[in-house]
Image (cartoon, rainbow, N blue to C red; front, side):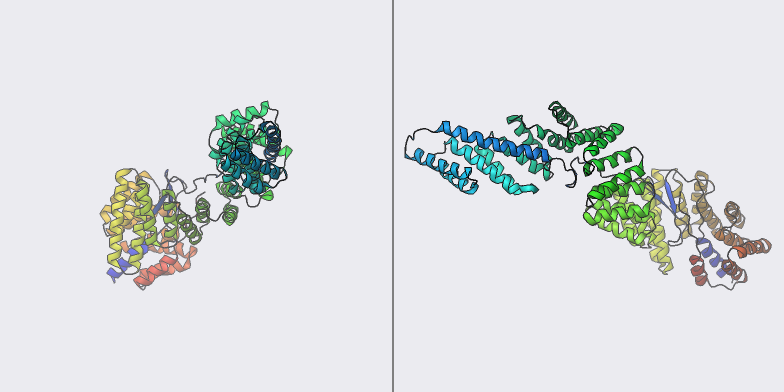
Length: 603
């Protein structure tokens, strides 16, 4: 009976788990609560509430709705069209001066085909004109009229193919056009607009530059060129381009927007906010300005105003995934996890392959303790190519919270490979400790021991890397306890107690270690510390009552029983059963495990 009672006592103490004190160590510590029942500690890399990072600011040209700058600029497109018309008129005048007598039949034939092409082009029969110009050049490759005419016709065809959507299929026509006439500014300008509209900023800037070098009259290209420079990270060039636009007297929503983004990139937040407000004075639906306004307000630590700006962006452009993403970040960072989740879900509706949105949504679910949902989102982020040590570590924690310890070990091992620091080694040890407990509960003692030994190796490595690591000492002590190495457990846990005084997780394990050594005075002293910190601690009263009883102090054991009965009669009954030797070991384990209280969330 005495042997069974001792085993039962050890089992009951194993399941003890108390809240953390208000002050924790520098790392963000989370003690296990309802997972696996062990008193062990996970440490988040940096902080479990580490702020998420906004997506915004990377591109100046965002979205198509309500104010796209670049290929979609109405002012630039209108100027290109006007200058294209002028170019055609100039070509008509030039050809009248270029008529010369045919030197031979091929030249005469080439000139005749050129004339036919010109007539067709004048009648907007562009395809027929292209055919005849090509035929003319076959007869006489040096026919300048035909080369320039073909260049103009190809440009006209390209503009038609590009349409209002800036179809990239037109690019081949513009590229061929400039082969026949390297001074075709219209072809360069329109090609730049198409590249710009399709997010190819390097090529957009190059073509805009060529158009302006040939024809400085393209003043309306300054704003989209400036934005292209910004998207390429060339802020100095963007600022110079804006100065040229200002010198040309251009004051449009585009130039105001460009000014705002330049100021934003220079971290001049107050000035940038004023500039975006000036944009919205001219066009209240200019979504890119409204979006950047939100991003600026977020930088200025005005999250509520930032969220309001993101909402206005989404009212005009509901598919703006950058705005919904950054709104999710703003909500997350202020601790509003339900709204953060909604914002990330909206982002993924419009951009399902956004791996970072999946990862951020997973973190949001983690904060809401929706661990199964979190694991699904971490998996989605991983499948879409995102893999960082922070994500792997968070994922491992959530897998543990879902009691999937083998998978938790794998993820935390992955984090350790990517960043083999003390925190990662501690967390690997934490996972092996709990995986070992799972195996022990399944009566697989060999498997449990294997996991405990692996955990011990990782935890010792953590302490080599960081000798003052309190959480690693707690986990190592807990692991020693499971392996029956109680003296080693005492040594580790006393170090933890010195580094982090009055930490009930460490004190419980220390009490358990002394209990394993049958040093009842020391065990009772540590369990009393827990009860003194929290007089209503169910597990503290339970363990202290059991320790008093095992030491032969029935009077004090009865006092703990009476106090426990007022708080939790069921646990008091179980303690009484231990006093009377009525409880079965396995049944007591199961019942005590079911009564482990949850830890409160950290502020």
